[in-house]
Length: 197
Image 1 (cartoon, rainbow, N blue to C red):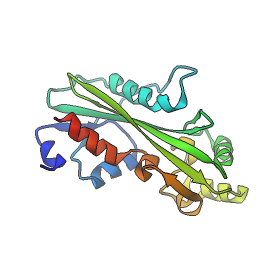
Image 2 (cartoon, rainbow, N blue to C red; image 1 turned 90 degrees about the horizontal axis):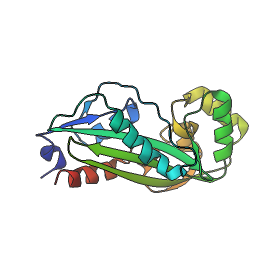
Image 3 (cartoon, one colour; image 1 turned 45 degrees about the vertical axis):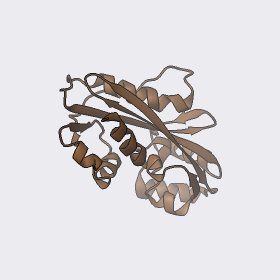
Image 4 (cartoon, rainbow, N blue to C red; image 1 turned 90 degrees about the vertical axis):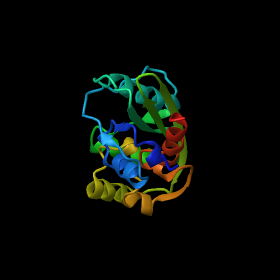
């Protein structure tokens, strides 16, 4: 049986404001509803290894959900970070920080890690996906052009792989492309299928 048919007795709630995550869920044919918007302060313990941060934050977002889940509801929360030399690069606070992040990623490899949490009233399952991404060296005028054209200030690491920079500057990826876009949708699909068993 296809996963979309297995999900018919359930309400899959996507707790994310990201248009990219919505696009990936739709593209994968998963029937979902958007959870109502709610606040969650995305703070993690100082000194936490960068690759553990998205797992921690996806669980934090799940626990912050303000409504009690019904027996047939599955809440899906996610967080994606860019890790460079062990340091987490989140969403830039402005243009200057975005320039610094892209200069830091230029000509080097970094890691994109997503944490995803699935939760029902009785069970919680959290998993991660990692992708390595290689950028060719970027000229300052390319960085300026990209920031002006795409304004990637809502994206971890100051870039979206599905935008100009992904076409023009990313040399290769080891891992899921969609993970770099913001949700490791193939892994979500398979983990959700296992979660229902």
